[in-house]
Every structure is written in structure tokens, then in C-alpha cells.
Image (spheres, rainbow, N blue to C red):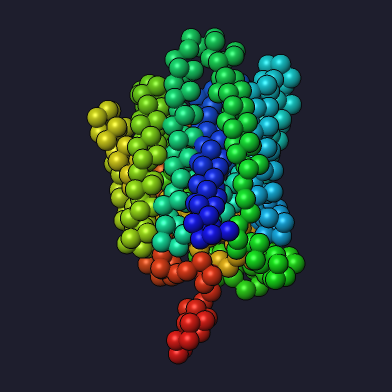
Length: 444
């Protein structure tokens, strides 16, 4: 094979990885948004009618239960990905995720089967969480390993772009559903977004089957360097990095608060759900475009500065968003939501998709990225329910704002002391600075 053929083959592989990551994340976060919207708007009445005014709290809590098993999914799919290949793990996660979401659309409600309905809802939600534990970590790890060194953040950004596209699509689908007459909404309308997920599932599954395994993993497998038990190796040799990623990924609290609690708080304060869903849609469509631009900036300026700027901006805008809702100032709601999520929040999550896996060596990259990220966003899953409880069932916004402010401060503070990786070559990713210098003969 000539050098030209090799370059063409490498370009095709990284493009396939980026497109696969886009559609896989689109499915994961389409599922995330439609479940978040349903839990805030309809699941309380459909699955917890006897809870009365607390039905919305229990409904939003079911959104959070998926995050309990995400770390378990991270261990499972990380083991599969680091031992048997990234491609296999990604094919299995997308299939499980798609089937689980489709089943929610077929689920009987409390009126039909009693308490079995919320039990089944939670069980299927746990399956969603199990699959999500390995989806985005696997996609980003695969893309990082396929991408050229100076463009890793750009290509990996398409996984995050897909995430925002999935949220926007979920919002777009739910807007006409939310506008249905109440009897139609609560009888069949809420099921439509879940059943439509089957289309994205088929597309993502077919793309995953065409993926190539990465050269980094193939080389590791050929030299016998695979960890026998990746989790054990990770906890023994890379536990500090896991904690670092865990704390960095706390910024996801702002995302879940925006996509879940804002709906409950806003509708409880007289703003129509269709307007709030429009804000969510426009914010995430903005992020679809902003993510690749953020990747380019990160490849040029570094991971750390772009991450920190985004965290600070997202935190400030989120607080302003709650204040705007409280003041019933719709132009300010749109501005704070679109700028805060579409621009600023997009920055740390896009950078993190590249930065987190770059901090682990190939042998534990999938497991490390998955475990660190999923432990970090475990808190994010329950943040809306915590804000709901502390805010007296959505009558107060300052507890939610305080939670977001603390999450932003921790993420930005940890980022200041995290290693910069944007100029580190593929072979040296995850190695300590002393080891990288020793590889090229620099005295240490």
C-alpha cells in the first residue's frame, strides 16, 4: 500500500468513527431528552398518580436512577472495549439502548397494570443507563485513537455535536406532542417520541458494524499488552486520573439541570412548556455548530483554557436563566439559554470528550474514560431531583443555581491543575511527563 493509500484509508477510518459517534450520541441524548421531558411533564400523572403533587418529584427521580447503573455499565463496556475491541462494545451498547427506549413507548401505564407500571419503567430506565455507561466513552476513545494528533479535538467534537443534535431532535419531537390536547397527550401522544427512536437506532447500528478497530488497540493486542482485568489496572495505576475526570465531568450537572429542572420550574411558574422546549431546541442546535468550532479552538489553544472559559460562562448564564424565568422575561430566557448552553456549556463538554480519554493509556482508555465520566455524571443525574426537593417542588430557583455554581467552581478549579494534552502524540497519551521525556531522550 502506498503512502497515499494509507492516508486515504486513515482519513476514511476517522470519518467513519466521527459519523458513527455523531449518530450514536444523537440516539443516546435523544433518549435522554425525551425521557427528561416526559418525566417533567407527563410521567408523574401516568405512572405515579397516587403520589399527588409529589408525582413530578418521583417522576424526575426515575430520570436519575439510570445514573446509578452508569458506573456499572462503564465497568462492563470498558472491559469489553479494552479487552476485545472498541467496535464490539459500541455495537452492543447501541443495540441495547435502542431496544430499551423503544420498549418505553410500548409500556402500559398505572391505570392499566397498577404499580407494575412504574416498576417496569424503572427497570427499562436502568437498561438505558447500563448502555449509556459505555456509549460516549467508547465513541470518543475510538475517535481519539483514529484521529491525527493535531486534529483530535475536531474529529471527536462530532460525538458531542451528535449529542446536542439528539437533544434538539428530542425537543423538536416533543414540542408538537406537548401541544396536543390533554387527553391525546396522556393517552398516546407521549409514546410517539419513544417509538420514533427506532429510526436512529437502525442508522447508528448499521454505521457501527462498518467501523474499523483502531491501530492503537490492534498494536496493543498484537504485543500482548492488554490488561487482563482493565478495571484492576486502572484502580492500581491510574486512580488519580479517574478522580480528576470525575471532578471535571461534574460540569454535566448544568446540562441536566437545564434539560430537566428548567422545564419543571418554568412550567410551574407559568411559562408554557412549548416555549421552554423551543429554548432547549435552539440552544442545542446552536451547540451542533459550536462543537466543531470548539474542537478547532482546542486543537490550537489547548484543552485547559477553552474548558475553563466554557465552565465559567455556562455557570453564569445558568444563574441568569433562572432569574429570567422568575422575572417572566422571555427574551432573557431565550438569550441566557441559547448562549449559556449553545455556546459556553458546549465548550467544556466538547473539550472533555477529547481531554478525558487522552489522559489514559490505550490499555485502560475505554475503562478509564467510562468509569471517571460516569461517576462524575452520577451526581448530574440526581441534581434535578435534589433541586426539585430543595426548591419546594419548583417554587424556588436558588437551590438549583447554587448546585450549578458549586459544580462549575469544582470543574474549573480541577481544570487549572490538570495536564495539558493537545500537543502530546498518540503513542505518549496517558504517560507521565517523565516517561514521555524519557521516550525522546530528554533528561529528566
